[in-house]
Picture 1: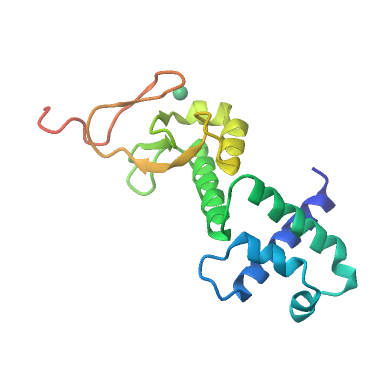
Picture 2 (picture 1 turned 120 degrees about the horizontal axis):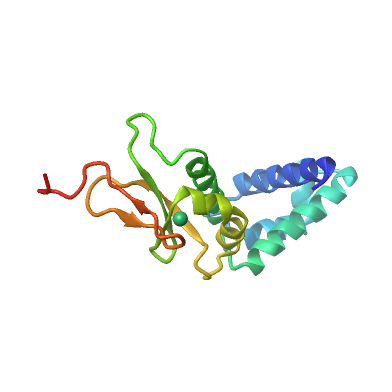
Length: 170
Ligand SMILES: [Zn+2]
């Protein structure tokens, strides 16, 4: 992606957030944000000028895409982005800090994935997580594997040992 394009998307996302923060609804429905983007008066109220037309169109496209993917609120969008931030942290370091406890990545279908497979399949994970795909690659989140049996990576069958092992098993 070109640098300027990226900057535009970041600005469009900031603009979307600004509209969201002006909405009375706590959940920030994407449809209401799209309506605001189609409403000249609402845009003027937000300080948008004719020069922002390209930005407004881009923001409108981004919202439309999200609605198509089945997202309803801005909160869901940020939650999915947060999940992907956690996936990237996991890829960089599958060990919790501080403490050095083993971390696992849980997928939406309840399976887990080792960090090597998460790294190798990040594109699939990113797409499935953003687009709410039920293809086995949608990430749910990361968690420390405190105790119990080792968890098995659904992709390569690597075992992820728990921090404290199996209770009662010396
Ligand atoms: Zn694996």
